[in-house]
Image (cartoon, rainbow, N blue to C red):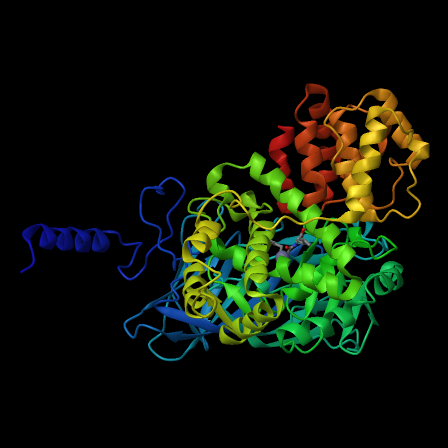
Length: 631
Ligand code: BES
Ligand code: ZN
């Protein structure tokens, strides 16, 4: 028999649900930061970063018809959503939006009632659409705002060619909603088609089938026939041209950087073939790269069929191409098997980072693999030293937090290290076979950490019960830090660097006596990244005059050196520092510099000047993440 207390609870819950006219009983709104209590049990399958109700009504296809208005810096047009009712009683479709102006919603030619809810910080506004009795489509007319969080409109001056404007979108994690009204959750997969209208002289490309020889007439059609999560919908428009690199690979870029990009990334086709050989066929037809202007806030973004890539990795010597291996690897881990919520991001990034190292080893050999693994491991150690314990957990609790503010090496390098440990325990060939089957088993599905753990339970943990144990796996995924006895990457090439760095610091070797002729970019990075926090003026001048570090054209080496310069207030590098901060918007390269500058009054004033000059050219995400350092 049900207790009175239980009946009273039911009665009160019903009353509460019905007494809120804005909140139909079937809808569970995400918790706002204020409501979130860390004490409450986390619902692992729930996406805390979306208002959508895919458990009631699920969108399966989106058809876009959008015009890019470069004068107003707006996308304007319609999104037609095809949906299915999961719950027959469902009457409301709830979408995510952010900064969108909704003009009208129609079903066929009939207007449909809709209501845009109050804006919630970081998440935007839920759009409630009352579904018509008949049919399975609604058409939403809307336009974006000038400062959409997921789009950047660049003036001609902010591009390589300086003649034409440029637009690009960046949807991950929760920004697709700022340019399309949709169910913006990685657990909802959609196919999409699009007609994009642009000024005639520009070319539009999307994360879909792109025709490299399409006539440049200002109207471009796209089709993405495989179901993808919303964060993989992407669009770019500019003075873009195409150059093939291989049979299935090519590059889109502005004309002035097209050749440099195509030769820097010429190994993309071999990377694709090597990955297929180990992890199964590539599912997405072509694999092209799009090179963006330097304000692109990430190194790369794995938009399917067309990875978006920062130009800051075009170094002239292929030293930074692991980025391409990384974005390519996402075609398996991330795009084919997708994290169900942002808590599970490590399933995307950890697997991809593991695959990246493996691809780099296959293409460039074990020495390179070892060097990159050590650099990654050191980045991880630095984060573990700096982050609060809760942020060191792979399956992180992100309730009430903005995913943009939680970006770290944990899902990447800790995730990869965890997989490397399993690989070492079960043997490389067996682990490769496991991964291939895992990608097949969950192909075109979005999965939670719990689903991965139970799959592991039924597969490797059963077959290799003698070498794997459940508790240790639990420790890797749900506890902070790196478990004792975890694999520790090592590199002989770096040991030599340690020896000469120590000798130089001791004074027994001058900078000129260091034989750096054969050093790789990775050795330079290791040399610089492991300098003591404080160097004296003589040491700084000696390093700079011997190795021309302030003038380095390699953006990663320049970054490492500029960080040393800021820590030691080495003023001769500040002119370069200023132009670096103004010229590059890739967050990973600028954020550590702003953070370090902000530690002194003088440094902060300098940072503020650079930031103010750079801001009109920065992407909204780079502004958001760095603003706090200069206030
Ligand atoms: N998917 C990520 C970028 C991302 C992650 C955007 C989370 C928003 C939220 C992309 O694949 C990535 O990892 N980029 C890295 C590449 C690097 C690790 C090689 C980057 O941009 O630095
Ligand atoms: Zn990634």
